[in-house]
Image (cartoon, rainbow, N blue to C red; front, side, top):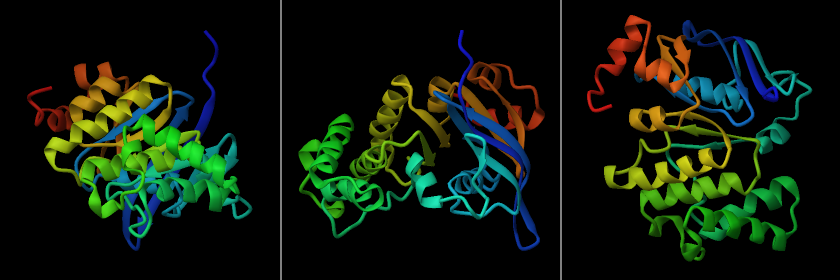
Length: 248
């Protein structure tokens, strides 16, 4: 079996807001093809960790290496990095004045300099993948939350990233729309997309993840395979957290 390709290496990561230390000495890595779910109670630091990985928050200390290069280095081209490490937000963040198709074309054109026809081809490929190609002329306000999130995923994919980060992608959705978004993410996992997912959907995390990270109070309390964490948790905080999800 060939050795997995290391994409991200996070060491001694700390993030403070004033005197409040939100992340405390975080260590973990992401290899090509990993589907890592980050779980834990609200306020445990999950979303802050993801935002540090995408440099939406600047780490207070520690390092985040992308293919061995520290992304916190002043010489690092943040925009080039974000081309390869895409992010899908809980609130969709679509451009309200653009159509669905334009939302998915604008990134490749503006950021990567992709020719318009090629950008349209990319956008249509990924809108078809998320079953939103029939809505290309709609504006975001004409879509349901689930449809908007699927467009947001297509928009991220159109940049052809190496990793996709999902920050609670279903938390802003009505319950009946959650499944359609999780189905898209599950399909991406099955295709081998490398993903880092902050989620409250425990059954989804259990079934889709190759690796699960449980956070509590700003630290990684426990991590391991899906079977390890959901089937045989070792730490009391992990057991207590998962005990709330009786239907797993």
